Image 1 (cartoon, rainbow, N blue to C red):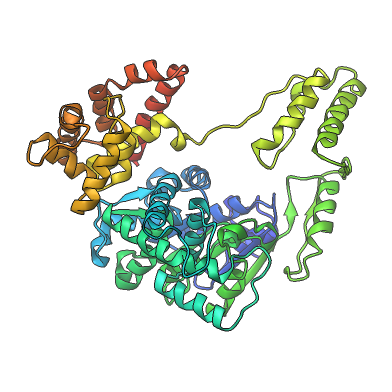
Image 2 (tube, helix red, strand yellow):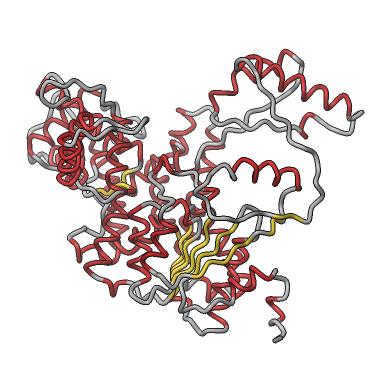
Length: 550
């Protein structure tokens, strides 16, 4: 038996088999929780580079979150060095597609300065579409049917259609077939008649995004597939890695297949027992589809858990074993059996909260001072559930705090500055205009903004172009007047756009932006916690600096 290379001796047998598997044979690493999947993935990438001579720039590694991508990058830095790891095409499906479209989008008629609509901006666009439909027809239903189609529901249904690769025409054809065949709708699914009412909303939403030169997150994937079909040479890929494969949807699977090409040099890591994104159109069937497309696929099971006690694993396996469709696999641990989890049943949420508070108090008392209040944690499915629990804890004199952090890029100050950057790069992006035309305050009222929107729709031009032409005196002002109030807004944007066109870095551009707007003073006037928000602005500049240097 050949002795293992020194750097692979700390891997268990299954991890070693996965890491050293033939790079020309597709691989599924089916890894349970706590089984060292990230370590295995990292070592396999390093093994392909160091032993098989695969250039880092010809490896695509896809993760499910940006956080996972950052963790993978840090681990690869330690294994193969920063110079090699920075050459990898590493990121989420969305970020990789976004980069490709920025560079090669013109090949499929996508302007490379497109803006990206977040969920909130998409929802606002759909809300305006629904209002327009109501105004013109008195209802946003088709025929005699009336619908309670709301913006959030419409956005969710449009997203599902896109992740299944259906455009409005294809969706309508499918829905009409279902109606004609009198298809029974599964519980929890939307009826065909409501889906039929969605079609014109979906179609107008696409038109609005095109008018704004914008893509939403689902578009990044759909157009990424389209780009790879039209220009397969835009990525010189020798091997593809995909993490959390059980959570991929139909479009993401197609992206993987297009990136892998005919050779099928692909390694995925996944666990069907951990598929939690069915509500976001994840397809657990993708594990089986991969074997169909790449029939030589080999499976390696990572079944040694390094995280949990025996009791936790026994409870987990007992639950998941009820799924008769799962692959036959198990988990084992070297940890002691530990404490057996307790399952309690309560009549309602108030009783549940009281039981939790009583149990925390009981355990702390029994510990004789060994346990502090800060040693206890309560996990909630969503923040709204905390109200009864907070009341019960307060009643028992138990101090507590709710950890409900907001995502960095969802913070007001960050979204304000990003909206300015979007408008500097893409003057056709109306959602950015609506967000920042009065930030900092310029005394531009809602009535003026409504009139501006009407003028832009009537002229079929972007709002920013209308604003600039009014300020320049090339077209009549609106009522209430806008010209004098928007003059500083237009001046600032033109100045910053000139800096951008001259090649100023994003980090420097943000610094110029906050200075031009006197944004720190704006935060002092409008936010009680302005110091914290100003730190977020500084963090955004740091993030932009790091992004420029990688």
